[in-house]
Length: 206
Image (tube, rainbow, N blue to C red; front, side, top):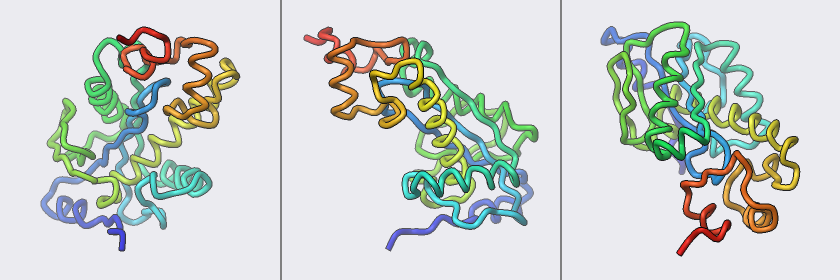
């Protein structure tokens, strides 16, 4: 049985005087195209939307519904690292930068940040990393939903400018459709040229 995300970690930290507590997660580290998006969310303990879970475990309709409820009841910040930054700094550093930007965008500065994964961004507050935090911790799960929905919407919008690539369907991930479009039409300004699959598709690999 899958473990259900809880508010236990946040409650313990709040009791220790570390409120507000923010959860941080990202979406889009793996795709061949588009930005990486990070979100920071401070949930209201009295108004946590029912059904919050790791965004990967939710379908599109549920993510959209929960996104609206999270934004309506929580303090939310978003950071976006564009393709130029990804290619210049590498995807890990671009992701950590986006996480820092998401926290900076919060209307309230957290006392503690809970970060999905095992790498720590530079933050103006105390922070802890949590492996698989998006599946265990409701604040991180909420951040995963905000990041995923924000990025998906961006990719759908960008698809209108590049209709031959199917960004609205695969969101920049490395699907057969995406590889075929790359081989037929070449790279767009949205493509991460530092990524090996993009280099290979463009005939730049050895």
